[in-house]
Length: 277
Image (tube, rainbow, N blue to C red; front, side, top):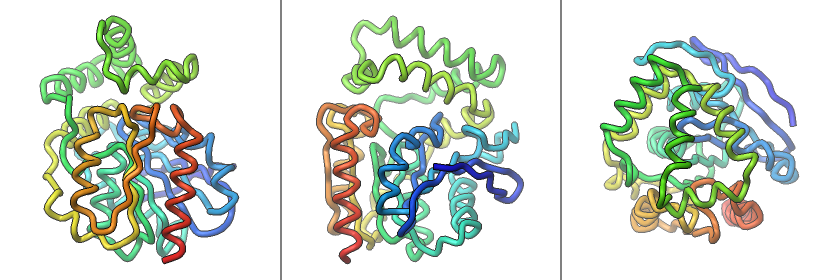
């Protein structure tokens, strides 16, 4: 695996890559990082040329500090430019959580650039269990006190929760790495990106009515205990022609970490089906 910096318009991002073969691109979620997928790049690189970029405002990407630069439209444009810079005409594309919402908009706008699609723990509408009040307050804290302070509050709230969600319970499976990973993700994020993208996730236009436009081979992956996104997976399964649904057992919102064996099997099966088409 190696990492390069890529110039995309007014910013630079970091992009990790490994392997040779047809291009496979991973797009991480809100508060995510390219290293959400790095542990698997070498294994997947045996059959694909795998790319895992940071979204703008995340990881080692440029921090603009400007809320207006963090929108769905900007992130879709960034993905288009990234593929151009990497000289990728069409790719197998996976989007996780908020990243799945980005790649959904990308495939609807640029279907010729997506050979196959994996929508992982995501939805075509705002996810369940989130409120504007929480994100507005969290965004204010991020802008005023910084992301490390916000992360410390999130961590305290999680520890104090007497009845955590089934998805949250799975984070203990990859402790002590999970907490360190979360702290790294938050520390690396632009507070302006947190405030703006959090609101955009809740204010987004519902795209359920457009799912029938997706014509490429598509797999929907979801952790069996990811309660906030099960309804989204159901909507994709009902709306995308010929879609293949995989519910990964014993996993929550991060199945690539919580049940990596089953997750890798699902990715390999998807690529096998897609590349036979």
